[in-house]
Length: 172
Ligand code: FEO
Image (cartoon, rainbow, N blue to C red; front, top):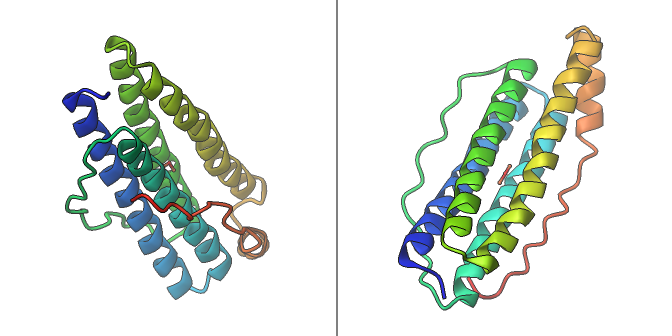
């Protein structure tokens, strides 16, 4: 059984994951508009990842007989219209999500809530991957010298990404 404080905190995290999905969807639209359709595809796959993160939390609340609250999602905030600054934004956003997940883990440890600790560990591992992906893309841009030819090749490579997020939740 979850504490009400934990239920509220997980519902807040669902909102943050959905905001992340919305942010990446908006970034994808901007990149598609600029002709970087490979980057757009990568960001759309990232949108699916974030929705998966949100739904995994929602299913956990359902499994714990807790109420899932879907609250207002803020408008996506970003100004970047070039690839490198955009991925720097992605990385800093992922770092903020990592910090947010760590708060849940800290709360679960303080409450001796072992089930949520196990769930939070999954997200902590996931965040290592999320930060690594964004960091590697920034490193590649730097290796390519941020040149138009390099960005063209990078766009083609990122366009190969397929979303692996399963979205077959049925208890949300
Ligand atoms: Fe839900 Fe990109 O972390």
